[in-house]
Length: 513
Image (cartoon, rainbow, N blue to C red; front, side, top):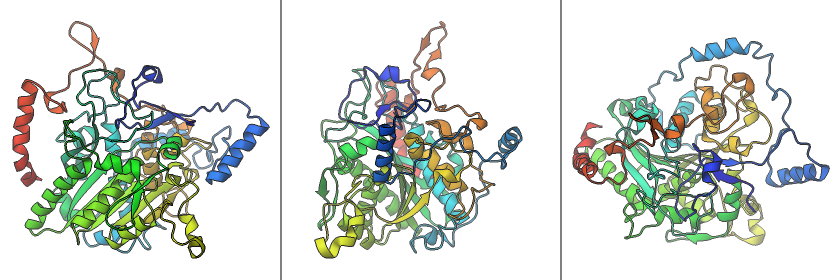
């Protein structure tokens, strides 16, 4: 039985009680943990939690009355908060053109992670924010006819989310479906008439503009994949079946591959699979920029499930484009395939940096028991093709390193991508305290969880549409607003003509990047 129940990121759980469940991909970034901190746990209950903690190698700290906040470090929280409010959230950009290959794993990030090189820190945060954008712009409203779509068109996405200063432009949206029976937490709109009955928005492709290209030393193509979180379901629904991929002994998790490769002629957005959509766009961009004599790289990022899809994407891209630098920067990603899959990725030259939080449950799955740790017995058992194996280089973070985060058992907060980005921003080394001059806005941590200490006075779960998305019209009625024509995923009527006009201009847009 599941440990958690998924809820919409921007809707109260009461609105989801009667939601229809269907096998499509509409990921959510939250789940409710049945935890009452004031209730005393019985001795058998305490022993059970302790046993599970040891089994899963989780680091669970009991909450203290003051959340273990070092008050000697911040004796006056009001002054500290005021100082933070008057500090820019972005550090000056350094020119990294001479070091970009090392920053993207040409030497497997040797001597760059501990201590963490400041240039690499900034790059990791940049790609993490690209992954976070897939959550911040996703339509979670089950009473919206556009549930499961992106709330903005690709030309406005970064502007709306404040990412336009990063120097990238979105060129393509990616849509996905699945042919497997998906678990309960993958929901869709309650309404009969929706923009799509089969597909959901799963991510996007972007490319660096001319100024950013000069700074980073090459034309960077980015693919960002959206994820979902529900730790218990990773175990229940994504552990049981490895499926062959490629021509060798490589095998990957069946559900991940289904999301990446499924398509159907009866659908509007998945006549081609997510795999085919993304590779068609990457092929176009690589051909265009290499044709201009530019150095091109492909960086793929994602959180949770998105990190798994990023690996599948990298595996395919490296095989199609030999010699193209392909790197993956993932956050809280689960295991994807067996040891043969890992070895093929290495042979293809894919460089993978896995950012994980020590207390996060999801990177331990699938293969919570049968995993790469069994490789020490290979001489006895031989290579086990049916066990799951992590790939690449790991950057390990610890919730307890930040003086701003609460202690105690908080699986939602542990797995939140904003928690990851906060810890990266403050990480210096495993032997150093949290970086005092960290720049990223601390308030972002509580977007979709309750991880910040109460002294900061940041509301939890604060990121949502004003008034749940309702607006007051000219008659004083509170209604759902109509989307701008260019933001409608399945346009009709005049909006369709507008969309066709925009689509006709796309062939010219790439020249303006």
